[in-house]
Amino acid sequence: MIAFNNPPFVGKELEYIKQAVDSGKLCGDGMFTKKCSEWMRERFDVRHVLLTTSCTHALEMAAYLCDLKPGDEVIMPSYTFVSTADAFVLRGAVPVFVDIRPDTMNIDEKLIEDAITDRTKVIAPVHYAGVSCAMDEIMEIAARHHLKVVEDAAQGVNAWYKGRALGTIGDFGCYSFHETKNYSMGEGGAIVFNRDEDLEKAEILREKGTNRSKFFRGQIDKYTWVDYGSSYLPSDMNAAYLYAELEMCEEIDRKRHAIYNLYHEAFRELEEKGRIQRPFVPDYAKHNAHMYYIKVRDLEERTRLIAYLKERGVMAVFHYIPLHSAAAGQKFGRFHGEDVWTTKESERLLRLPMFYNLDMKDAEYAASCVLDFFKE
Ligand SMILES: *Cc1c(COP(=O)(O)O)cnc(C)c1O
Image 1 (cartoon, protein in one colour):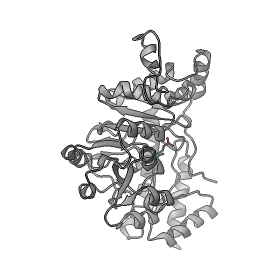
Image 2 (cartoon, rainbow, N blue to C red; image 1 turned 120 degrees about the horizontal axis):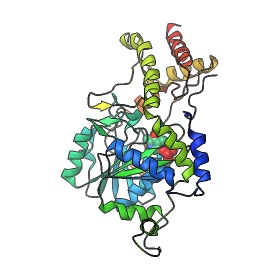
Image 3 (cartoon, rainbow, N blue to C red; image 1 turned 90 degrees about the vertical axis):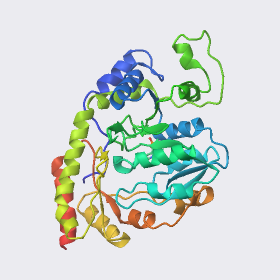
């Protein structure tokens, strides 16, 4: 049986976890949390990185830091994971969904402006499959209408837009280190941002509403409750796992691209014959091989293909029932404009096994099963 996903393991994870345990400090903001944040600050060229317990929590922090009031609107794609919307809904905001571009499955930047009302406060682009949204256009619209931009870069860690790391372009960027993502700590994430003014509020929010971060830096004598807050910082054991992966970032990236390229080559002819579509990466984007998907004719063909692959021991999956058709999406949000592509394309998309420890032979076998399906 070829799994769809396995959590990445590159080698030093357990050694680093042991070091964290031996250090006598297991709570948040220990040695490995600092190492991970420093590593990301350097590599992604961003001023502030705060590790969080998930990308969902990073998004919740971003929603809070955007100062949203109940009834404020946030423009986002409907084709995304629930957390993109949920984080804002928790603050009483209304997700306003717009259609995606069929080529990248990302929010269609050309439809954003029409969805803006006087309640709109934030645009939340999602970099699907680690392929960048059209960020220049989105940032330009945001600037013109004085909106904040929160990048859901859960899938976009170590992926780039015109040489800039995804997550570092908008006001806030949110990363995921869930076990299904490229770099993992089991459950975890980070919020990244550049403005120094946001740091104090972010630190307080993350540390239960206290100024404990300042206390640890020796800037104050006692720490106390100063504002609204929660607990968004992960244990240093989790950070230790992540640091082992970040150190091996190039190797993880290389392997994932090897799998991506294997699939991409294998399916070239199928695409030329018009049987399927392969992922498209615009010139402005350098992706991170987070995912490999194909788009087949329709829902019926996809259902048959999933069953066909399963019979042959290959786990292939689809995801994202568009949020505007989910019960909570209807209760909390609305779709602006026409759903030309969101539902149609989401029903055609099929994801193939893709993870660091996937054997290349298994990837080859999975690809050959897809080819066989279309021969029959
Ligand atoms: C995985 C994912 C999330 C949630 O990440 P967690 O770390 O599991 O909270 C949010 N948005 C997108 C687009 C994702 O793919």
